[in-house]
Image (cartoon, rainbow, N blue to C red; front, side, top):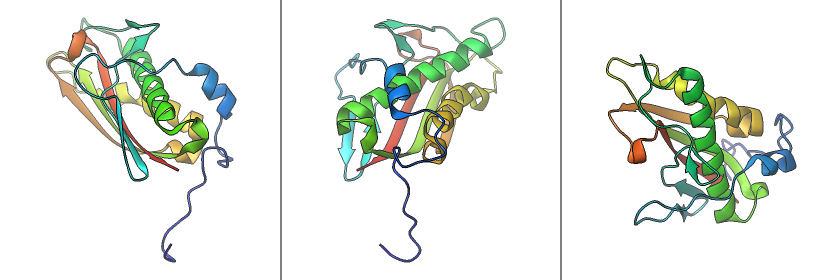
Length: 167
């Protein structure tokens, strides 16, 4: 490691995390099953990439339709983003054998099924980003893209992909 590299604390060592690993473990659903011909995660070196995760709860899509005027409310869209991120974390955990092997969240890419003229996609994704910061402290802070789209698979309101650094 060069002098300019910073050692990042692991999730377990991160003293700024607001949730313990056991608290987070209790919030996680089982890893979602793919809804098509793809794998849910791929590990490349010390990075795990997830496929897009939908707001699934108990095997059912919890939030459908477009966000915006006359459609899905911001509160419901924020909750959907949080469900997506819980599903994504569950996938990463399954890939690496436990939450203790996640070093940090690197990137979140979110797609929001948006009504015409809806421009608050970043606010929708705050449901995911705020949870990651709460759960993982500094290690949960990430770069992000928020994209508005005309439709998502299964008419989901939100879809999220994650890149995580792992041990």
